[in-house]
Image 1 (tube, each protein chain N blue to C red):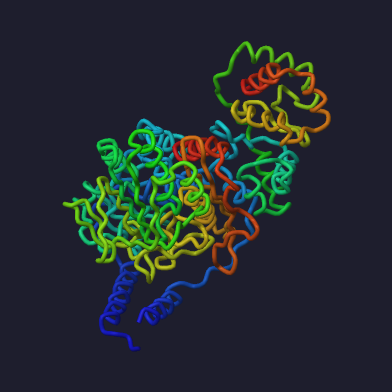
Image 2 (image 1 turned 180 degrees about the vertical axis):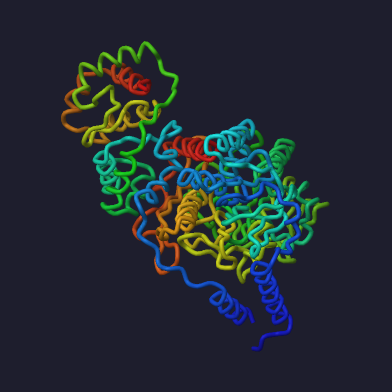
Length: 192
Length: 432
């Protein structure tokens, strides 16, 4: 009986509505909006451990997603999610997030550490992390205003060797103490 | 087999109401109950959204973000929303109260120009494009229905509204969750907590198992001689099974007794006893009965549910109901193919739906769905597990993209940290 009933309903349904035309492929906005549940509307994260994607360079997004997908960059769920997308999807997401406004956050940081970090940034990092880490160029991520716990978790991954530093970064980081690195992260978190 | 009389009459009934509705939309004034009592006269293009939870808030927000010329009215019966995700942590004693899970609508309304109407929706007149509420009626061009779930109480004999005050379901976060925690706190050490989970599909597939973990977490610290019996109507754990089993062995060995294929069909409230298919009684000092579920009452009343009379069939790219034109159903109430009934799914579906409503109202083409689900479950206060997936549409159905997604390799501390960030971000997205 049940079977026949569903058959009838199907007929009624077909009569009532015309079939929908097939859909266009997902747009950059469609692909990227799905990320916002964790990374915030338009990629502006509310923190504390998910990074803001807003205003990241396209190259940085594509590079990160490819490395998540291959497993080169360690993750919890990002690797599993990245496997659901093509390189073209990554490019589309990169385009979308690179066009979003820089997301300034208000965080409580240690002012002394941040001041020390500002000097260290100027001396060591500023050639790649431009404009106090606000300007993401090529594959350099936007560091400014990222949430401190996120920055600390990533630095942990670098220090443990699970995440690989670019060579130029490794050279600069090596002579710095744990306190220096912590100061740097406080600085970046404080930049608006 | 022939079409029996009862079903034939049902079919006729359905057809005649459709025909009547058709008349109303073509002819002169609609005969719907509410048109005399219209509030907020519609001037331009309007989308009405029913339900201010994980789906509705996001649909309302994204429509306004995409096209400010479309008026959006969000109707919600309460002046706040309490998240089901993370409410198990409150039961575990990890959260002191429900305030971190509670959002209000004022910032969302102000930031995006959404009109929030606190009212109960009592009927939907699909033909007249009218919503009837406790405060009057509203016209719409498109309607988004995001009502969450209600219960199939008729399948658990004796489980009426009064019974849930004794045996809370706590499957809608709020007073029910508070009641269940109070009962756990009042229970003596050495007591038995009985939980019952319904057959899938239900809201939050890993939810019952996370809850068992969190209640055991509480018992282990405060009432270590107690035990928890989880009666699962399903033959085995529905989601993240091996990880839950591993977590229970590691942290709650001997405390959680899992019993599959145990469908509770009746309750004896007076004796705090649940009855499994008329043949087995299980008594608890605290009973948490999670009843079988269906789409929220308003979706059923509006004829949006399908042949199963439980869930709402929808177009996979637009979430437009296949039962009624210009009405979209998102979140737990909808049949969204491979996308589970979860908060993140509802968030993701809402954005897909919003995109295609805006496109339709502007005469643009439908954009194909791209969706995500991410879902964390806590085993202890410090260890969690997750499941994640990416979705696309193939042959008119929502599928998980092959060779992607999946569950955590193991229990881990990082995900207990990320889960908190998940909550913070998703609630912020809904409330601002």
